[in-house]
Image (cartoon, rainbow, N blue to C red; front, side, top):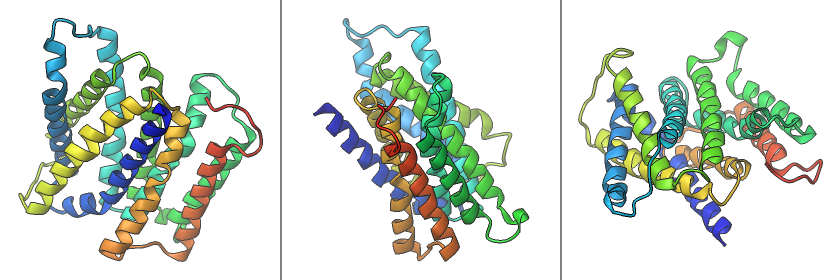
Length: 294
């Protein structure tokens, strides 16, 4: 029962994240990307401290150790790196392409977990990686090799960081309470963004209603709520099953982008997206052998 509830909650995350690609893309015309992330994560941190802070002031409050803070900080750095690369990349690629390239994190999760735990990759995982890699090529290589956009490459780097975040969260979720894990990782991401905002870019912002809504929605729903849900849910389900559910995010993003902005994918890019999803399913469903997930 807990596993079913956890996976339904993760599915709700997918819907919220997938539906906000277009919103963030539009907001980035009025605000610089690192400043946007700094405001997003700072708002989320304040919300989480307000929500959970009282628990740490009670007489029977759980003890917070240096190891917990270090683990949450590391996870937060992975999270910030993923969002930084994805957000900067989104400035020069389309929301559907960004979503499908970010979806490659799903393929990388079991492979990264196999590397961390020193387990030989399965045949289905290798086949899935090959299919997803071919799909990524079809999506990004619209012309010669030089036509791969900077945004595509940055988004792919973000996918690597997101896969590390899922594996690290799965590793520490059983050792650290989800409240501590949520606050420390989001707080570390906020500090990372604030420390970079003033020297990696010239901060700019136009306080338009779109920007305000983007900060509120991504800060409260897509960050504070969503990553608290993930920290709780990964107590009851595995990293690979989490990644499989998150594989649906680009589908939601594609549908939302088409309905709101009329922005879809070319036939070639759509074929690439299909191959990425096929690779994800090969990696996660493991049809070639009936061994347990990590």
